[in-house]
Image (cartoon, rainbow, N blue to C red):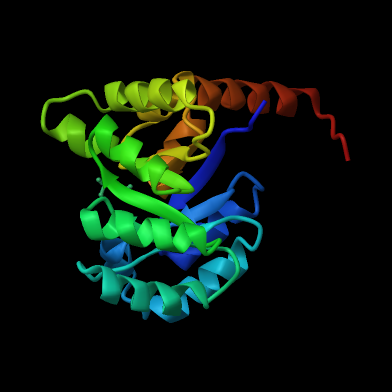
Length: 222
Ligand code: G3P
């Protein structure tokens, strides 16, 4: 059985360091907005991220709209480290770049996916990952999990597709369990969603009681 992967959706080095020590993080995704938020130079910060998760893919996104410039940017980004996945948008030029890069054995993450047909084309273009954006569909009053379900059904019908479903634009722990139930291969999470996944008031309450009762025994395990 494949294991579900957790990527961090951030370009914040401190946040990556915070979670990487748990061994729970299988990769990182970035995008131009996250690079802007970090205030860092894209090449420098991407190199640092790649070193923090050497065994996992790190998605670095091209910013050009046309194929030729996308390929020039991808050539620079993929030289940063061996674990770079080039992120391209789900456009005609992005799909074309995806095909060229995947034929050249470069991992590709096709991003800004909002329909099952877009995901179908990305798989045909050899994408390593397809990134359906759940939260942004929910923002429009649609159900983002329906999209994950449709993509999953389509990919299962065609076993030659090796593209992994990377659920993105995840806004809550509920999103994570919903897509896990649907068998998403990967979720990419902002740190605050990952923190919310392990936090529960009954866990805290139970721990307080254990601590109090333990103190009353006067014992020490050490
Ligand atoms: O990696 C891109 C995606 O996860 C963005 O999420 O919250 O900006 O819609 P959001």
